[in-house]
Every structure is written in C-alpha cells, then in structure tokens.
Image 1: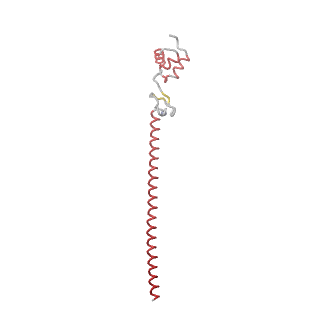
Image 2 (image 1 turned 30 degrees about the vertical axis):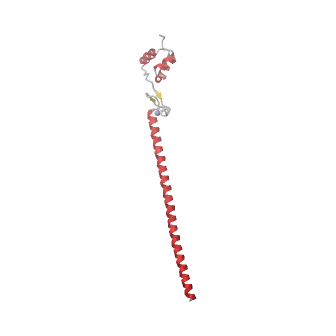
Image 3 (image 1 turned 45 degrees about the horizontal axis):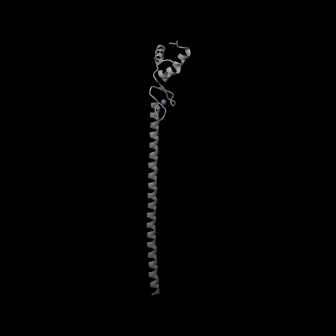
Length: 139
Ligand SMILES: [Zn+2]
C-alpha cells in the first residue's frame, strides 16, 4: 500500500464529511485504507452535510423539499404555517367586513323606505285635508 502523501491527508481532512467511500474513490485508495488512515489521524469520517442556509454541518441528510438541514427546514415550515395563518385570518376579516357593509346598506335602504312611506302618508293626508277644505269652501 502506497504511503499517504501530504495532499492526500489534506484532502482527507477537508473532505472527511463526504464519507470514506467518496474519499476512497477520489484518491484511488481502498475504503479500508482511507478508514484506517483517518483513524490514525484522529479524523471522523461520519458523513456530514453542509446546510447552505445556516452554514452548519449535520449528520443527517438535508431535507429534500428545502435542501436545508432539519432545523432550518422546520423553522421554514413554521414560518410558512404562520404566514398561511395570517393570510386566512385576514381573509376572514375581509369577509366579515364585507358582510357588515352589506347589512349596513340594507339597513339604510329599509330606513329610507320607511321614511318615504311616512312622507307619502303625510302628503296624502295633506291632500285629503285640502280636498275636504276645498269642498267646504265650495259649500
Ligand atoms: Zn441549516
């Protein structure tokens, strides 16, 4: 087995998070050689993923829908849930306001209809009174 070169060890250090298989493939070494050399150097080859959102490394694969670590994805979905909640609440308020406005208009129409009815009654009564008075004057 060929001696480990400095550049290989540097690669091993930098890419430890890629896992032993990927490193072995890249360096043209066997997986067991990579593993034993890493352990000699005190390097963990646990596969890690880099979250582009928070910049942290995680031992769990990135969440598929977001491409972020679990924590970032949960935060993002909580934000989404809060946003959806705000939207639906705003919509409910708009609907309530629309109903209140319709009821107000209907109430105004009822009131106006009643006012007009009263006015009509008053005018007819006045005309009737005038007619009676005219009749009396003719007499
Ligand atoms: Zn993250």
